[in-house]
Image (cartoon, rainbow, N blue to C red; front, side):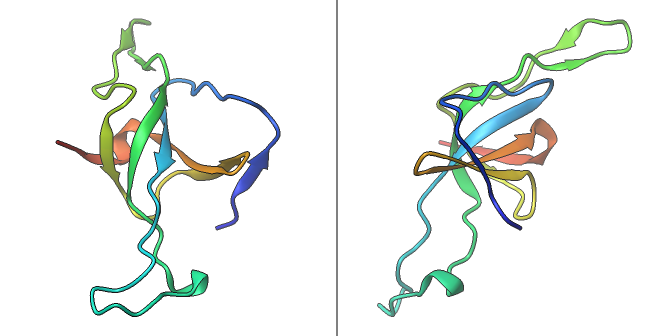
Length: 103
Protein backbone atom coordinates (compact mmCIF):
# COMPACT_ATOMS: atom_id res chain seq x y z
CA UNK A 1 0.00 0.00 0.00
CA UNK A 2 1.40 3.42 -0.95
CA UNK A 3 1.58 6.14 1.65
CA UNK A 4 -0.21 9.43 1.09
CA UNK A 5 2.16 12.39 1.34
CA UNK A 6 0.54 15.60 2.60
CA UNK A 7 1.88 19.14 2.74
CA UNK A 8 -0.34 19.99 5.73
CA UNK A 9 1.23 20.76 9.09
CA UNK A 10 -1.37 18.89 11.14
CA UNK A 11 -4.34 16.57 10.76
CA UNK A 12 -7.50 16.24 12.87
CA UNK A 13 -9.22 12.84 12.69
CA UNK A 14 -13.01 12.71 12.34
CA UNK A 15 -15.49 10.36 14.01
CA UNK A 16 -13.93 7.36 15.71
CA UNK A 17 -10.60 7.70 13.90
CA UNK A 18 -7.21 8.06 15.60
CA UNK A 19 -3.85 9.11 14.22
CA UNK A 20 -0.90 6.94 15.25
CA UNK A 21 2.77 7.84 14.81
CA UNK A 22 4.45 4.66 13.61
CA UNK A 23 7.34 3.34 15.71
CA UNK A 24 10.63 2.68 13.92
CA UNK A 25 10.94 -0.80 12.44
CA UNK A 26 13.71 -3.19 13.41
CA UNK A 27 16.99 -2.53 11.58
CA UNK A 28 18.44 -5.99 12.21
CA UNK A 29 17.37 -9.47 13.23
CA UNK A 30 17.96 -11.09 16.62
CA UNK A 31 20.99 -12.81 15.09
CA UNK A 32 22.52 -9.46 14.06
CA UNK A 33 21.78 -9.54 10.32
CA UNK A 34 21.02 -6.07 8.91
CA UNK A 35 17.72 -5.89 7.05
CA UNK A 36 17.31 -3.94 3.80
CA UNK A 37 14.25 -1.65 3.50
CA UNK A 38 12.44 -4.16 1.28
CA UNK A 39 12.69 -6.94 3.90
CA UNK A 40 11.44 -4.91 6.88
CA UNK A 41 7.96 -5.65 8.16
CA UNK A 42 5.45 -2.88 8.71
CA UNK A 43 5.44 -2.03 12.45
CA UNK A 44 2.22 -2.61 14.36
CA UNK A 45 3.08 -0.42 17.34
CA UNK A 46 2.80 3.33 17.62
CA UNK A 47 1.87 6.33 19.72
CA UNK A 48 -1.46 8.13 19.37
CA UNK A 49 -0.95 11.75 18.32
CA UNK A 50 -4.56 12.81 17.61
CA UNK A 51 -8.03 11.49 18.45
CA UNK A 52 -11.36 12.22 16.77
CA UNK A 53 -14.45 13.28 18.73
CA UNK A 54 -15.98 9.79 18.71
CA UNK A 55 -18.64 7.91 16.82
CA UNK A 56 -22.24 9.10 16.78
CA UNK A 57 -24.85 6.82 18.36
CA UNK A 58 -28.32 6.33 16.89
CA UNK A 59 -29.74 9.03 19.16
CA UNK A 60 -27.14 11.58 17.97
CA UNK A 61 -24.91 11.59 21.05
CA UNK A 62 -21.19 10.87 20.75
CA UNK A 63 -19.58 7.73 22.13
CA UNK A 64 -16.19 8.71 23.55
CA UNK A 65 -13.02 6.98 22.38
CA UNK A 66 -11.26 4.67 24.88
CA UNK A 67 -7.70 5.75 24.00
CA UNK A 68 -6.01 9.11 24.59
CA UNK A 69 -3.23 11.12 22.98
CA UNK A 70 0.12 9.74 24.14
CA UNK A 71 -1.05 6.11 24.56
CA UNK A 72 1.16 3.44 22.97
CA UNK A 73 -1.00 0.98 21.04
CA UNK A 74 -0.82 -2.25 19.09
CA UNK A 75 -2.96 -2.19 15.93
CA UNK A 76 -3.95 -4.59 13.16
CA UNK A 77 -1.26 -5.29 10.58
CA UNK A 78 -3.14 -4.22 7.45
CA UNK A 79 -5.42 -1.61 9.02
CA UNK A 80 -5.65 2.09 8.30
CA UNK A 81 -4.27 4.53 5.80
CA UNK A 82 -0.54 5.28 5.72
CA UNK A 83 0.18 9.02 5.79
CA UNK A 84 3.49 10.87 5.58
CA UNK A 85 3.66 14.38 7.09
CA UNK A 86 7.11 15.82 6.52
CA UNK A 87 9.57 13.09 7.44
CA UNK A 88 7.24 11.39 9.96
CA UNK A 89 5.06 8.38 9.15
CA UNK A 90 1.56 8.00 10.57
CA UNK A 91 -1.37 5.61 10.26
CA UNK A 92 -4.94 6.93 10.33
CA UNK A 93 -7.17 4.15 11.62
CA UNK A 94 -10.51 3.44 13.17
CA UNK A 95 -10.72 2.78 16.89
CA UNK A 96 -11.91 -0.78 16.21
CA UNK A 97 -8.54 -1.57 14.55
CA UNK A 98 -6.67 -0.95 17.81
CA UNK A 99 -5.99 -4.30 19.47
CA UNK A 100 -4.41 -3.24 22.79
CA UNK A 101 -2.71 -0.45 24.70
CA UNK A 102 0.84 -1.04 25.88
CA UNK A 103 1.91 -0.27 29.44
